[in-house]
Image (cartoon, rainbow over all chains, first blue to last red; front, side, top):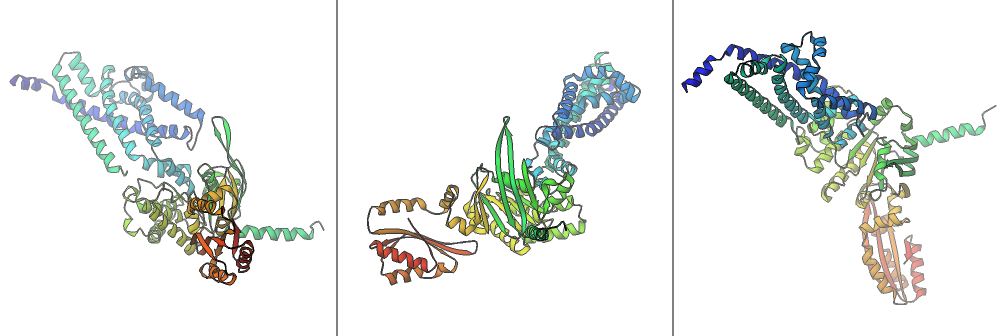
Length: 224
Length: 358
């Protein structure tokens, strides 16, 4: 027992605190941008698909192809491939800033597919009823599709955020900041297993909190 | 003078027609593409619906009735033909103008199609918000509509908390929010139990009378047509095969499909058995007598039989009403020789009854 306390006391908690904050910052910004890019992309995927308001086989095929390509590249490889792009966008490929573009580019297509699936769940009859009342396509998106699929969208954001937690950790490998970086540098490269265990514990708690929050919101907005 | 004396007359004549008919469907065709083949759903529908009437379209499933009603507000774009509502040709409008026109056409659905994420009040307010109505106006309108459909206490509930009949009432209130000229009912009572069906039909009739809204409904239930419709069209294979006043069409059905629907409510099977059994005997004539309106409640049959001294036997009979019109139909077996029977039939016809020898 004493040994354990000693081990924990040896850890640089300031480092861990900073790393946790970095992870939260990466998570916050990347979730925000993922939603900002992925939501419209998902709506466009849905609307251009067969039998929908803006049915367009050409646009759907292109969007779907891009999404599939980005989703099929493993994140750790995507991250490395994107280094030049990241430098172009934020000026560096390192640290918190350098991690956000690959996180967003990796997660947005994933989230877009979740959005598409949620929108498919919206009752066709309700869309038709809105059309019969003279709704424009914009009004159908804002007043029918998004409110009706809200629980599904919230669940999608939750899943995406949890995925982003593991992506942020992976970015530690190529010099991103945060808990992943800490785990790689101390836990892996310097064999400080305790640091590894502590970071994993923090990530675990983080994921638990996020999932719980998401589930509560889904229940709160479910009306069926 | 280039104008002929007739051009003036023609103009006036057609202008008059436009006012009389609120809805006109002209030579409407609709084809669906199924597995690369074109399948016709509507084949040349011509239909004119008067302002203020309740017009019913009855047909079996697959006859094209759903396509027909959805062509009226262009939820389904007809392959060819014209749709005119109050003189405006909907089939000639662009999307923006069509959206404007659709606000004058309310629609209710078999499965209600309410927003599950919005309260009853917000569902009713929905079309008003689409039309960018000021909030104060919306609140007043929603309150009035809730009272009209009798859902005042349910204002803040969500659709999932309501029964089927209540959901349809919300649907009706929503459809009326923009003060439409026309209300389209797409199998509006088909998902409801008989009692709820009657209460919804009563509400529709009430709305038609209070607000003067023209109602077009489609159904596969005779009961619906008989309870509230003024005129009916029978659709089969994408064509209107018979149409006219409900009383005329259903008391003297001409087309096979119409007869099938009439049989839904009459016990014709029993009648056929009774008739075939009796037919073997000579000196017996079986007739069907139809009473309409006031005749229904008068002892015409008794008086006539007394005069001619014929004895008779009632095999089957119905006395009911279609909307407000009372009617009766009796299948009567006349006993005695053919001469006397003929005399009786003449006498009945002389009193204005419809008599058919079976």
